[in-house]
Image 1: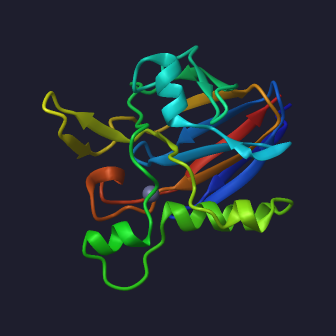
Image 2: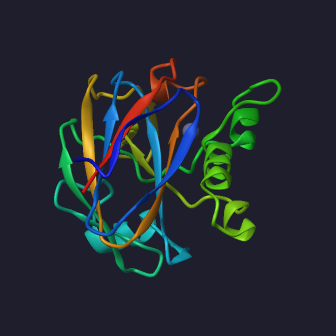
Length: 204
Ligand SMILES: [Zn+2]
């Protein structure tokens, strides 16, 4: 029986959920073209968070593969990518979208963002200090995000190459708060110009 049954995160919104050590969260790209910004915090010490930069240093590559361990900002093992039925195209470089990015891209007026979704999800989760909740979120694991690094260092933002129903499984190595955002980006190809919902389930 799943520790948490199948749940849906609607388009342009986020969620936070506790995932115990040894449990696995399965994130399903329901429509196939949705990027999921993904963070974890150590439930016992939310100052410790999943770190893309520390993971780069440990793995010596940009994109994690199945069986890779991902690390915290204290260089401690935080989770393992245990399964990936997509083509394995995920981004670890790009910061979560925020109000400033949308302004730079020409949006007029307020626009939902992964940064806001992170803060709202943690507020709804509760039991995290306002100091943690209100800070700028760390760089996320951008699941299914297709950012190609060209040989001259140029980054090209493409639409996801994943297909409907493809998923990744991440096994927690410590009691964790998992925060996820259905990226609302609609001014780049990030979500194939059409942000949509995704589903997740927590397995014991
Ligand atoms: Zn976003």
